[in-house]
Length: 445
Image (tube, rainbow, N blue to C red):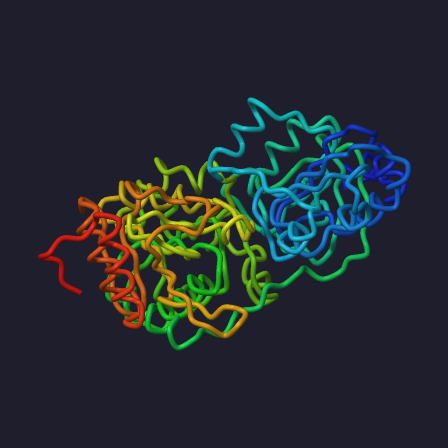
């Protein structure tokens, strides 16, 4: 192999690799399942040697060792561009901060404002041409690597080779240090079992999708459940253009429902920027030209995504208020997730010819005391973050129906949303709407 000698020169131990980190550095971790879970533990062991090292991640898979190693946050300050379950746990302990982000802007943020000192990323083994593949997480990793003073790759033999697209790999000439890891299997995200209400929401959504539509699925059990329902439907010639690739896309493709034949861009291929799912999904992605890995400024650019006709954006939310404001990232002041690409695709779908932007929620959620709470609320919970502004919100879907909010006045929005709220809460919502002066005598629910 042409690059064997260079590989040997740059090959080092994990201890030596993390030794390049200095006090005050900004350290960027690889994204999603390509986070450097091996190197993270070794960096955490240096906790007493370092001061004020800031670490940035994207949806770190699990609990970052650097965060757990320093409860006082004098040595490591851990941050996440989009919360995972682990980051949420750390946030509740005061050990993780969220970084607000419109996902499609991320590469430009690094180009204009961010100068990382060290980038650590999990990769597949080097190929004969000297490239390390980024596996299921393209995201913004090429840009981060280019902007970083030092790049350390953590080689893992279980990483699938995911074809581009673009920016799906890094060349050895752009790598400073190579560490061969413990080769632990890729972290998997199993499919959540859909509830009866989830399945009813899926039925509503299926009625809104036409043959030839291009499907985007957001993060969460609800979009994945809808995708699985689409895979079992009799729809034809669907396409895929999404930020997140989940098992449902594999099911849609293998069932024949999704072939991309009517797409205007990436015809015959599912474009995505990262994947989270089961080992079956990662096996499906390996050297498979049916899926195309792109950096996020391509997949999530509203101006690119909208070029696919009949783009249907399917995303989850925490709550929606009677004005049509959508909160998808916090429960009050508690950070749950992030803005991610939801705004990108809601905007793109409206600008796609025949497109639809769907916010899909069950009408109620059960709290810790076992009481039901409406997810359609008069006003958002104090401290809740507005993810999708009311002027941008298109469709809201529950198991009780669909509300199209575009072009609607405040009283029309209130009526439409209360019509799809759980029947047990409709009277109280009407009473609150009257107090808010967004209800008129001619309203009916």
